[in-house]
Amino acid sequence: MFGVGIALNAAGYMTLTYIGIHLVREGGYNRTSVAWTTALVVSLIAVVLPAAGALVDKWGSTRVGVVGMIYSAVLVYPAMLFMEGNGLLVAGIAFFVLAMGVPLVQASAAPLFPALLDSRVRLTGVALGFNLSTILAGGTAAYIATWLIDVTGDSLSPAYFLITASIIGLATMATLRGSGYGGAGTFGCCSYFRAQSREFLTRHRRRLIGSGLRRQAGTFPPHPDRLRRHGRLPGVVTGPDVPRPANRTPSTMSGTFIYQRHGRSLMAA
Image (cartoon, rainbow, N blue to C red; front, side):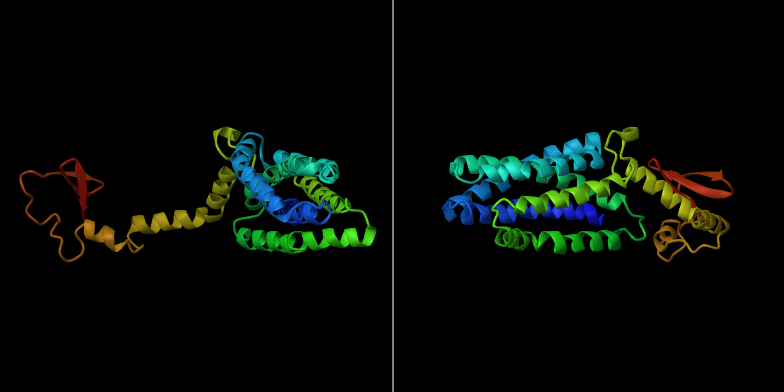
């Protein structure tokens, strides 16, 4: 999870945070124009996200995530190369092309993270893995990118940061071996939730069976609402010793009276 979070946050923060700085600082474009270009690209990412989610439902989180990481790693260097000295229109198109890798990684990570952990440690594991990767690769992305330029003197050196993060994510994906969300078409529904249901039933089978036996034997305290419906609490006058109106017909089932009225049944001990 930590490795996937590194790739996810590096792609997101590099694209949505640093590229705008890069266009102003290295490309020399107007700040206002770059701000509007960034806003347009972010809006297009929001539009594309549902389509990326549909791809995850069809192909699974692992496959779509791998494609998104490879996409970002392969296109980041040429995209940043086209952003310099070719006009704001070409730079905006290159910005948009590079940004299309972000929804692929984000849409695949959303169902992948909870599917990797057991329900007993899922919340803690996802919180630790995602937030630590956000601190290391997300919040520091712009700083690392500008530091690489200052150290190397190469305005395209921030691309190596995203390439490295994507490689870490791909290496992590290679260790999953089929884990994660397999797509909505698996067995007609989400295989992840089927596995979680089986896990819950296996873990609590004895407790559920024991509760059912105690309730059947009368040693398990029933809910007050059920007692009220059955006439065992004050204010409800029902029972085998109470005269029944003519419009009620008694029947027996397992030694218990059932009053039938208006198509509904009322049990009375």
